[in-house]
Image 1 (cartoon, rainbow, N blue to C red):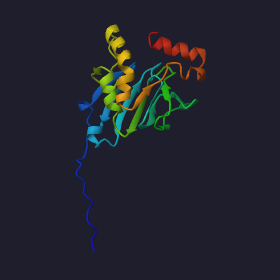
Image 2 (cartoon, rainbow, N blue to C red; image 1 turned 60 degrees about the horizontal axis):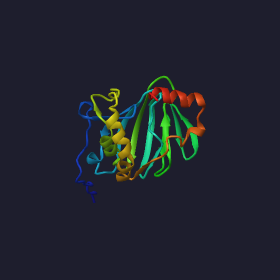
Image 3 (spheres, rainbow, N blue to C red; image 1 turned 30 degrees about the horizontal axis):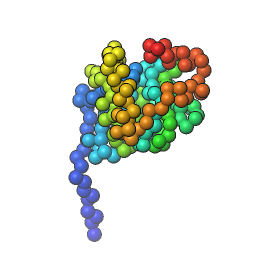
Image 4 (cartoon, helix red, strand yellow; image 1 turned 135 degrees about the horizontal axis):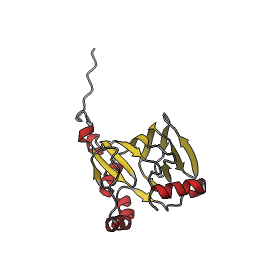
Length: 188
């Protein structure tokens, strides 16, 4: 007796570079390769460009976050520890684990990131300006818009089941020179 072929109502999702949304979060540029609308909200896939000194502020979110380091290297801070992630490294951050990653080197890093379930990409699109390509740097910040974003950030994060943590959450795991490097890279 022949087995029947499994069926699905979902269509094949294909993402072409020219069709992607590229959004800046801080110094980083994230290219949304596949979003929740492409995957029935099961996952999102994000191509991350992290310049020297870049990386997100400390945070936690309900979704699982897994990234693969394609180029460059990062210091990954999670649950009170620090790990080096070099090319070929894969990192899985459990849901609600306090974390961030920083590019403490002098060359850009590139990460392929999968978030499950999807949704984090919509948070990014609500927070940051759109740019032309996955490596386009962010536009100069508008002080008024930045102040408004910082005021609204906790509420935006909460809508996406996330929480922003204090900026110094992981500084006890960094050297004074690393802290200064990140501050200078971010114009502080």
